[in-house]
Length: 156
Picture 1 (cartoon, rainbow, N blue to C red):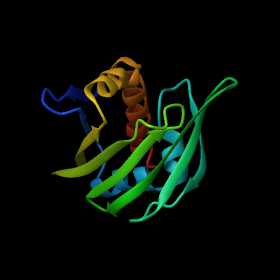
Picture 2: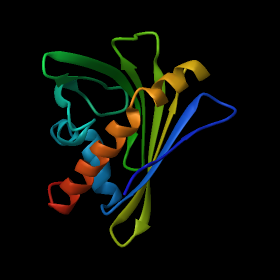
Picture 3: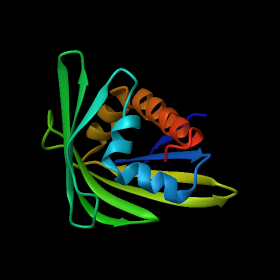
Picture 4: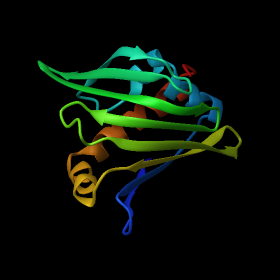
């Protein structure tokens, strides 16, 4: 299963939708527990190390992804954290002016299934298109596949 990734024609927004064989509570935990997040986040070729993680309304986070000797650091602030919704900022430290506002919604489909709706609002169409061309699709799909496997293995 792959995520549906769409670019909005009128706004510099990327929308991602994917169904999971996991409950909303499990997906929420996977996005707010730093140890779980580090296990599934990003492409298979990058490992994630959490620098700090305070997943609450008003909290902040930072992690570093590594591939060999290359490091990619990201940080942001949690603006709203509740079981059905996470709103946060996201900044790649390699491009500190390119802050995005991300919204994650967990839609209960019943029978232990959940539809994740993720939306990233960036500063420009050029910025959005650069994200789309960066290979983000690989990271999204490989990360979500690992998240799905964690759920299947009963680790969420």
